[in-house]
Amino acid sequence: MGDEDYYLELCERPVHFEKANPVNCVFFDEANKQVFAVRSGGATGVVVKGPDDRNPISFRMEDKGEVKCIKFSLENKILAVQRTSKTVVLPEKRNLKLLKSQNINVNWYMYCPEGSVILLSTTVLGNVLQPFYFRAGTMSKLPKFEIELPAAPKSTKLSLSERDIAMATIYGQLYVLFLRHHSRTSNSTGAEVVLYHLPREGACKKMHILKLNRTGKFALNVVDNLVVVHHQDTETSVIFDIRLRGEFDGSVTLHHPVLPARSIQPYQIPAAGPAPVTSQSPVPCKLYSSSWIVFQPDIIISASQGYLWNLQVKLQPIVNLLPDKGRLMDFLLQRKECKMVILSVCSQMLTESDRATLPVIATVFDKLNQEYKKYLDAEQSYTMAVEAGQSRSGPLLRRPVRTQAVVDQSDMYTHVLSVFTEKKETPHKFVIAVLMEYIRSLNQFQITVQHYLHELVIRTLVQHNLFYTLHQFLQYHVLSDAKPLACLLLSLESFYPPAHQLSLDMLKRLSTANDEIVEVLLSKHQVLAALRFIRGIGGHDNISARKFLDAAKQTEDHMLFYTIFRFFEQRNQRLRGNPSFTPGEHCEEHVAFFKQVFGDQALMRPTAF
Image (tube, rainbow, N blue to C red; front, side, top):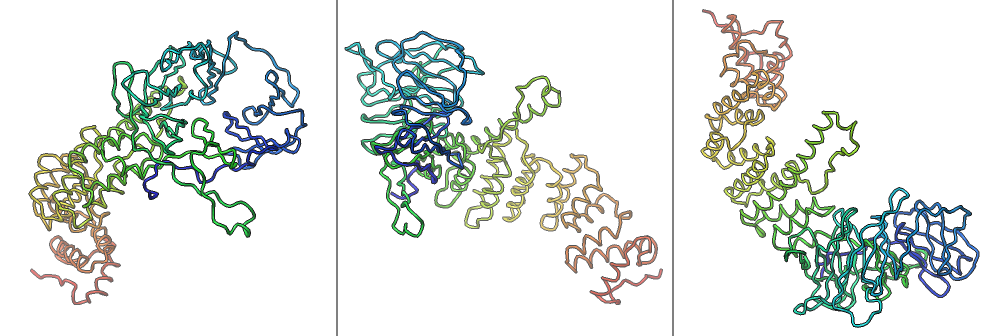
């Protein structure tokens, strides 16, 4: 299996710590994501490392017996050590104050640092869960809820283990995940993961069921809002996306794995020791090892090997594993690092070998532009609110975040469409159909089409001499009026004479000032087009010769300079009876240049009447 087939990988730079052994005990703190390596009860040293810690923390403690648990408070200010089942010691002397107490029989507990929620397992069977929410030094009791066990338990002993429960934030909402090893329905075999939505207010509700279609030992992670289920027996993993459409049965949504099961990408452990000694090759890591411990949301720890990894999703391999382009786009648009992969999918579906049908291309464009429009609307609402002065009165006003799912017109133009139009082997009818499909999609979502997309259409039509189609597109306003577009049409007059009038009509509709049009044309080095335009509106007797001669000289086209110079000589002759330029026109530099290139004899002689 090549690298292009694995869609999950362990991070490149794991946290390395001293592996667990009889002398060294290893603990993990889920809140700070720190690994504690405690040697000899702390007497010979404690080393604390986390994924974001540049420098590990090292210290020693008195050996007062076996350490059952050790953690820092947030920001590593206070250290707490537990050595017996009923005492927690704070090495620094502090006064503790009881804020609130609850009298509940607890089987086990679980804490979610991201959601600041603790979950207590209560009752004999353990399947009634009582959540508490911590905020700003207060503790709120949330409504308790019952986890449905696979079948009515025969005994009255604890039936819900904390091993089968996880808490994680998915798409900004807190969920309790229950790994049910046997389905409640008799006609279904295999385990499933049941997702209960735990809101800050209101009752907890069963929302989703992830069908695993297999039995055995499982572990759960959440990465980039995807639920990852690892299966130890087959040494593979599957991913679920609760935002993708599933089967709704009236109360919950059933989901199947997004992709076929695959192993995590093979991982090499670098050989330990000083650099000169480590000439031996890296050791392959045993994936899905029984010594692996999985923590939320995305952490895998191998205590026996001394590594902590973050699990990561690789998007590029998924492109070839998910053939349905619409579903692929729905999936990619929800991922954090999606933009370049989305653009590569768009490019790929326009290539000779993987060309998609126009309806599929239209679906992809619509999905992208729906996301783009959402962002534009949010940005506009924010701007209007700021202008209305709401930002001072309401703290809730936040500028919308531009995620990678926002693929705008410049992204599409730069990375996909401009490259696509340059491919000579692509049939021009298909090229034009794709460009028009993208413009149609933008119009459908009421997004103003940028002029460079229209220019791309016009250039493609002109390249293939499709002037009749161009005329129709302009006549029926398929291409929206814009000044840059009008200037482009003016420059096409020598290939297609009607373009001049089409351009003037467009400029009139735009109520553009004539001198502004001339400036735009000159800035684009369209000197002849500018001259033709000014003659067309009868303003050529009053224009500055120097401005046009400057622009002509900048093009470094001597014949163009000759044509423009001769035009103004003829104008001078007609208006003043002499082709020479007056001192007030400041054209001495251009006269000298003309003589240098074409010789004195090329200057026009006064015509006697």
